[in-house]
Length: 167
Ligand SMILES: Cc1cc2nc3c(=O)[nH]c(=O)nc-3n(C[C@H](O)[C@H](O)[C@H](O)COP(=O)(O)O)c2cc1C
Image 1 (spheres, rainbow, N blue to C red):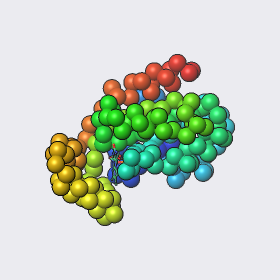
Image 2 (image 1 turned 120 degrees about the vertical axis):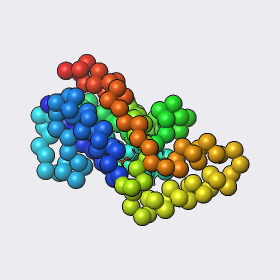
Image 3 (image 1 turned 180 degrees about the vertical axis):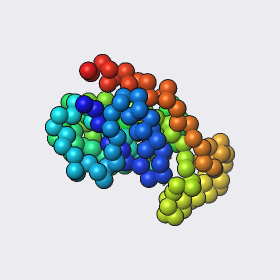
């Protein structure tokens, strides 16, 4: 059995989780529901979370899950950055030692300003303002100025292939 556990605030990671669950014919639950589950017969646990200010959210919790279910966990991180951005490769290089062996994937999802709370919208506005003030950052500003959505099923293929390989 495979289960997907997701953490999502503006809905994009949840959409990826739903898409992947549809392809793998498995359940997807939010992180809040995780405590109620019996995961002992679970062969693969796909943990989906997101990037915030250059950091993987809920990484501490994921490390605890890996400890509890060694060899069964997979990490999937969504973000606004393109998959080939240097920040993404730097992210994997800075993974803590205890989880660097864990299969990990990055999915560009986009940005959803409508789904953000006031604090997160304020953080994004500060970032936009900083980029506007810095010469040579127009392209970066344009990339995050508005909501956008690059979610697609084909980006999930490497994860689907890994699950097939493992079963
Ligand atoms: C406050 C804030 C900070 C963010 N920081 C980053 C970041 O450092 N790098 C990145 O690629 N995306 C960043 N994003 C974009 C989110 O990671 C992206 O929209 C993600 O898919 C949202 O997931 P969710 O909709 O499931 O909450 C940020 C978004 C917010 C709201």
